[in-house]
Image (tube, rainbow, N blue to C red; front, side, top):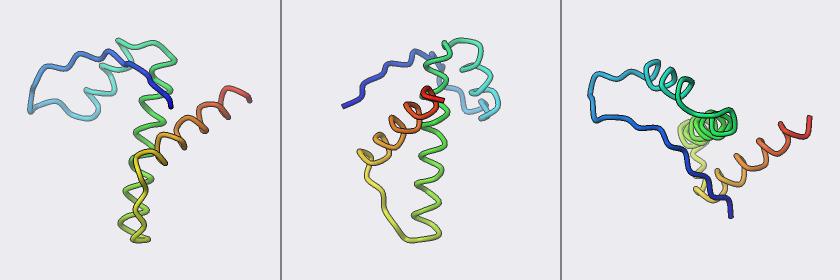
Length: 77
């Protein structure tokens, strides 16, 4: 099991855009947390595409395994 804590404080605000959220992450978290945030976001997007285009559901556990694998491979290069 993989456990990571990412401290990004975000006040409830309907006006925040994804660009604002990304800027907040870039300004406030360390490089290791950024790896997890963006690989996880990509994995959710990829999972969504599998559901929409291939009618294939992917379990959260599978997504997290994929995230862990991708980060591990990235660090080995």
